[in-house]
Image (cartoon, rainbow, N blue to C red; front, side, top):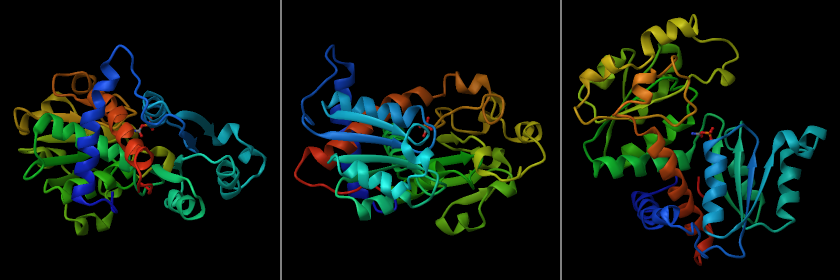
Length: 302
Ligand code: CP
């Protein structure tokens, strides 16, 4: 998101708008990317991002191929870069990469001829998640300027939070973050967001609540006493929504840890747009693929 201008974001969201209806036709296919090949290379687990990129590519008639680290020759000692060079040798048009190291897609982009899409790199960025979140916010709220967005949870390890903060601030929204002190990075205020350890303060008067999972897989030691204690302060329930605007929407990138950062009542309740985010993820990823390889211009999304 750092590299995208306001105009770039607008173009992607508008393109997603025009492609979204393909998913609701009887024949869910357009010939736009016929003859193009798309490789999904996921070094970390994924449900939503991997499947929606694959569905997006197929709905635009591209050929797709998926590779995961655990079933690739990386388990036999092949390096990431050698793996990438071998994928490149098969001449794909796009490689979609998820990796645990921040910056891995940038290394790919410098070394490969194919366009590279960042599907989440370490704790750095998850740009297509932020784009689908922005699309969903625009769909529900119409505007970004002046919108109050509260992001609550494990901010320190969240590439989703980072990409959303960058995008939302560019578009004129106000962002506040909340979580335990150990899960809020010190430099976050310098990005232009307000910080509170009390979720009730972050949520006061807000239009959008974005909840985040605690990323235990990125913590070498637990950064709070226990998950039980975490959930007693930060598990978002219907009562905590009372301070927000009446038409607040609740978002979560998934996967949900029910009972830890979100209650069943909120996850499945009337304010939740969590499954709309997933639906919109297909349209946004169709747009990203179309803009990268459907026209004359080829570039990278990071
Ligand atoms: N939001 C998200 O990135 O989900 P997955 O890890 O399932 O792709």
